[in-house]
Image 1 (cartoon, rainbow, N blue to C red):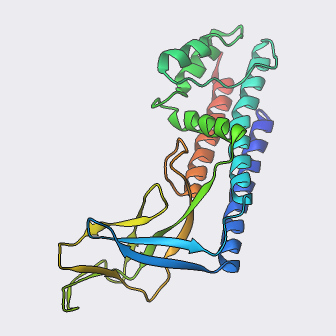
Image 2: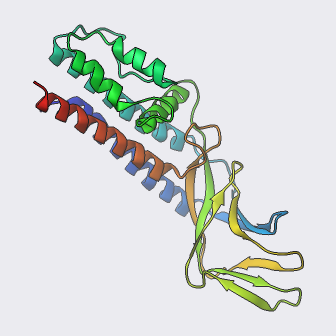
Length: 256
């Protein structure tokens, strides 16, 4: 099967993503945590999560393994495509990435292959910053960081069920928002979850505490992907990589 090793790398990355979810859920069950409610200077509800100890380094290692397998899948596909072309394979042959479009297209043109349509194929993938393949570019940036330091995660409250109440100085409920619904929180770079709703001076904001907020694991602000929930973000990178390998297969099967 064409590009079999690249597909195997993607499958391994999927296993790591599943392992991250299962490991994190087991950690939450085995390590009691506290949800701290607060209000920021703008009158918005804030939630922070605290554990008695630090997060295990295992999370970061699993994330790094998933990222590296996805990036390596692209390298395997590049190696195989150049081999199919009859071009030379060497230790420096890898999937091209560029910080700019011109830099990226120059690298694509520099791939040593006897087939110009292969060079054009890589140009079309656009794996440069803000290009059509920006997710692939981000994947490569994450892989580079992980080579030098671990991608330390954040843990934050991402949402809660039950809604928000706004009360006056006498404790009277003035407004109920998202009653019996899900309130999604924005996570700040320090891991504090912040609501999008603010209240005027003299009012108070509080959440329905009948259910525990959902706690999840996030990339921190140093990651080029930004402060995002790790598992959905890794899944998106997996999907982008799988779609790219599918493009390799289609290119090979349809070219003259």
